Length: 628
Image 1: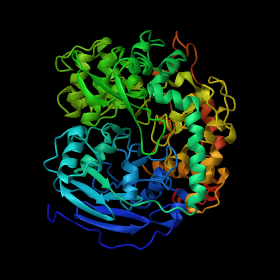
Image 2 (image 1 turned 45 degrees about the vertical axis):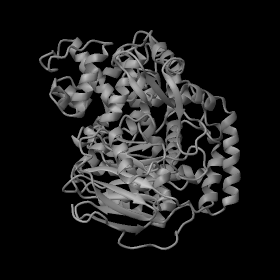
Image 3 (image 1 turned 90 degrees about the vertical axis):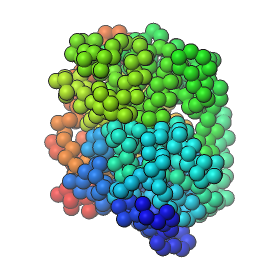
Image 4 (image 1 turned 180 degrees about the horizontal axis):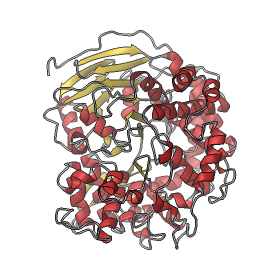
C-alpha cells in the first residue's frame, strides 16, 4: 500500500476557537494522503458540532449524483465542543455520509470513549474521501496520523478486529471504530462498532466504510480540550453531576439499563410484537432489564465521564447460547430481536445481539427485516425454498441465528436480507407491508402508540428515526418544562406538531454537543457549559435556532438527493388499528399531523422545501439560492 507511515502534511498552530482543537483531519484514501485543515470557525459558531457541523461540511462536498458507495461520498467522524470534557453524558460522536440504505442523509450517533480519544489526539473531526486499493485502517494519535495495512484484519469480526489492533499497537488504551463482515460485504445497514459492542447502527455507515476499504479508525491521545472559562465550566458540570446522581430516572437506568423500560413500553403498546401485528406480548417480563439484572448480568459499563453506567455486561455459562462476558442488549435490541420475533428467551436474545455486534449489523434493521421474513413465511408467501431450507417459526431463535450469519456474509437468502426490509417486501410484491419510512426500518416504538412518534418518523432527516424526537418519553411524562415542552396526551393530535417542532429543534441542538438522549440535565445548565467552553453568549433560544438551522439544512440535502414527499407516509401496515394492547383502536391522522407540521416549520407542503423566507431567516442564504 506504499509508505506505512503518513504524517500530517502541515501542522496548525494554537486552536482558533475555545472549546475546539481547531483542526480537522482530512484523509484521501485514493491518494494515500493525510492532511490537516483548520476548522471553519464560522461553521462551528453556526452549526456547533456533531451531525450539524458534519452536514454543513457535507453540503460543500456532495451533489445529486454522489454514489453512497462510491469513493466520492465523504465519510465524516465528528465530535462537539463538550466531548472529552467533564460535561456529564456528552462523550458521544457521530458518523455521517449519504446513506447507502436510503439514499438520503445518513448519520449514526454512538457513545463510549472513541469520541473523547479523537479530541485528545488533537482533532475535532475526520473527513474521509476516496477509496483505498487494499484494506487499511487509520491510526490517529497525539496530533499525527498514519494509514496502516489492514489486509490481516479483513474478514475478522469487530471484537477480533479491536483486539488485533490493540495487540499490533501494543496499547490497551487505543479505541477503534471498526467494521465486521457486514460492512466489508456492503450490507446496506452495516454498523460501525467501537468500545467492544457499542454500535453506530443506523443508516449504513459501516457499508460506507466497507466501500472505502477502511476497516477501522483508531484513536489515542493525551491532550485536553481548551475551555474559555475553565472555572465556570467545572462549577456547572459539578452541579449537573450532583443532580444526576440524585435523579430517580438515572438510578433506574443504572439498575436495569435501557431495557428496564420494556415492561412500561409494552403496557402502553409502544413496544412492537410479532412484526407490529400484535398489541401484546405476555412474555415481556422474560426479556426485560429487570430479568437481565437478576439472571445473566455480571456488571455494568458506561461512556467516558458518565455516572449512569447504563450499559449491561452479561455472561452465559451454559446451554446453547454460551457467551463470555460481553455487552448485553439494550431496549431497541431486546424488542427487535425479541418481542418483534416473539422470542422470549433472554439468553437467545443476548446471543443474537452478540452476533449482530460481531458481524457489524444494525440490530433494529436486522430485526425488522427478519420480522417481515417471518410474517411472509407464516402467510405462505415465502417458503423454505426461498430461505435455503430454513423453517421460520415465531419464537424460534435457531434459524434467526443462521440468518444473521448469512446476512453478514451475504450468503444465500441472507444476500436479499442484506438489502433491508423495503427491498425484501418489493421482491415479493408486498411493499405496503414494509415497516419503514423513506427506506429506514421503523424503530422499536409503534407509531400507533403516539402521534408524536408518528411525526418523528415521517419528518426525521434519516427516515424512521426515534432519536430526532423521543416523543415516547414525553408521552410518559418525562417533560422538558424549562423549554416549554410538556406532557400531552399521546393520542392528542391538536397542537402536537408545534410541540414536536420545538422538541426536534432541541434534540437537533443536542446532537451538536454531542449529548446523550437518556440524561436530562437542566437546559440552562447545558447552555451554560457551552458558553463556558466556547466563550459564546448563547441562550436557550440561540441553541434552539441552531437546531432548527441544522434540520433545515438536512432537509435541503435530502431534497438534493431526490427526497420524495410522496414517501412521507406510514405504510398501510400501520394504518390498520390493533385490537388489543395499549394502542388498541388508534390510527394517527397523518394528513392532519403533516399539514400542521409544515405550517409550524414554514415549509412548503407540496414540494417539501423550506420556504425561501425561512432559509433566509436562519442565515442559510446559500441554501436558499440553491433551492430557489
